[in-house]
Structures are given as structure tokens and as C-alpha cells.
Image (tube, rainbow, N blue to C red; front, side):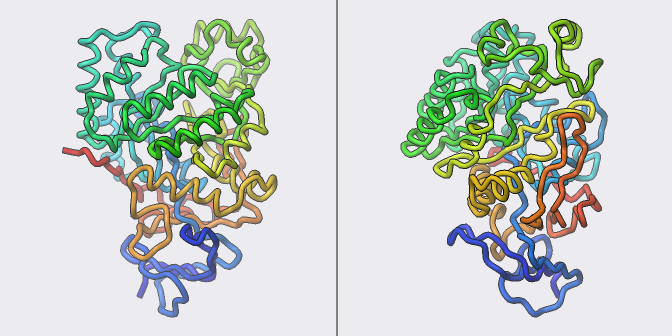
Length: 452
């Protein structure tokens, strides 16, 4: 007898690139059978009219900050509610706490809502050493930080991330010195661009080529969806043909989010984006759910520099182009939450892609969209048992209605659940039932390949 039998659903076959109708049986956390199944099960789910997808994999998000916000899950539960079963934190050079401390809390809490993987954030080490964001690191400091990266790789990190725009003092040579010191060619490197320009894109392509590592261009939309997305996609597609280790991720919103005190808002930002204070939205803080004026902008930048704000700077047609590109690219949330508030991408990214860009706007097919949020990130992360429906694969699944799935979160209210997600299964057990969380401790930490 199977643990769970999902009957009559459509599931993606990525070899044939089509949706197949059939049954899926789960036992002991694995997919035990696929096809027409007559055997009984402890739990039977009728998925008629639904798509049974591998659980969505978010290759770029930002984990909980247990150090400042307590030992509880918020962003991971938002991930689970939108169908994510595995997510990669520690991006943009920013890890919210040392990896060992993060893992200690996960163990203390008895698991997590989703499977977590982590990057080692280089900028975080610079901050710990007190390095000014506009200054390069000394040779001694770089050696110390290389040691910290290696230490976290040995603890389970899958790679290293950089935030070049956040620390403009990190020169190209510093990045290369760090990567040259790590011999593993399969190391995953993700980088938040240095500047919103083709120079920024080309620098990342150059790092990928020169380092020989797997290289992820982080949230391409927030870099290039201000007038040069087509040029950026052309350059990335051409470069990835020569270097298959190069790829990018993108999110489905025409606005980015970051700290108001970050270097992103240094002098010249209004001219660069042709936007002004009234395009900056504050989802939290003293002026929660208000757009900035010149006065409130400077008040918060000076007095609450860690406040996350949302900048409405990007072009919708260019967002669609980055999602629709089938030569390369994945979808990721870049989900960032502080004090239970933030950009709706943390709660709505994947339902938004499947609802708006697949069903409504028809800029990408369902099978191509599913591949971008399951198989491609799974392969990128070395997860050969995730991201696909096949016997022996991990039983992480998301069951949704393609006719109704949609995001719910708004810039004013983050915690509005998506609609159209019937169930989410993690490790062969039901985590979401009828849209509600019924078990948020089924996930675990998945270590990278460098654990010692």
C-alpha cells in the first residue's frame, strides 16, 4: 500500500516537453510509481483538472534572520504557501547570520517549512571585518575571508555570493582572488551586478569565463529591465552557448527592493533610472505603506538606513522578456522580508508567473515555465532527485489549478496567500492542504558537495 496516491493529474515530462495525464504514487518520501495505478493508498488525492508539478525550487531568496527576528519562520512559510519546496538563501553577498548559527536554529526548531540550501555571503564577511563598502579589502583581509568561505563550504554551503553594487569597493581582482583560491570548478557563484548597465552584465560574463565556475547572474530584471534587457539577453544567451556554466535568474515584478541606506541609492540614482522620490515605496517603518517625499526619503536614509524600500523603476515588457527567454534563465523570487513586511515577490513569485505570464499574457508556455522553476534550478544545484517526476525521485510536489493560480500579496500587504494551490507535499508528506499549512517542519537543510 502506498502512502499517497495522486490520481488523474497532469504532470510535466521534460524529455517530451509536454504535460502527461497519469497517477503518481508516493512511499517513504519517494515517487514509487507513475502511470495508471490501481493499487490502494493510505491517502488518495484526486487531481483531475490539476497540474502535479515537482515542487518549485527558488534558486535566489533571502533566508530568515533568526539573530534579529527570533527563532520562528516567516519567509519560509511564505515560500511554502506559493509552492516552493526547496530554496537557496545567502544570495547577493548577504547571509543574515553565520551558517553554523543558521543550522543550529534549524536543528533547534526540528526542521523547516522547506528544504534549505545556502550560499556563503562574501559581503557579510567584509561587514564583520569592518571594511568600508567603498574600500577594497587588504590582502590579509581577503585571506581571512577566503578562510571563512572555505569554512562555510565545509559546513554545507553550496557556493559563494557577491553583492558588487552593495560594496562598490570590491574590485574585479578581489572577486577573482577569492574564486581562484577555491579549486572546485563546480562551485556555484552568484553575483549581484555592480551597476545597472551592459558594463555590469559584461563584467559578470567575464567573471564566469575567467573563473570557470558555475555562475548565476542574480535577478537580471533589476539590472537590465530599465531599457536594455534585449541587449543583455542577447549577450547572455550567446555567452551561455560558449559557457554552459553561465545562467541567470529573474523575478516577475517591475520593482526591486533593498535597504534605503545602501549604496544603490548613492548620488545619481534619480538620473540613472529617470525616477524620483515618489517612486520609492516604504512597506514598513515610520511611513509604512507610503511613497517617499524628498523629506521622508532623507529622514529614513539618515535615521533608518536598514529599512527595506521598494523602487518602482523597471519596465514590464522587459520583465516579460526575461521570463519568456527559453535559451537560458530561471525564475526566482529574490524574496526578502524584514519584520513581516516586504516586496510581494517573497509571497507571490511562482503563482504570478503561472497565472499572469502563462495563462493571462501567454508570453511563455506552461511546460517552459515549469522547467524554469523546477528542473533547471534542480540541475543547477546538483539535485538529481528533485525537479522531475520519475520513479525514485524525491516526493516534493506542488498540485495547482492552472485555471485559477494567481499571486495574492501586494506591496501594501505581504501576507496574502496565493490562490489555486491545492496541496504541497514535502518529503512525501502533506505540508499544504487546501491552501493552508498543516505541517511546517518537513523540510531539512541540504548540504552542498564540499562538506567535511
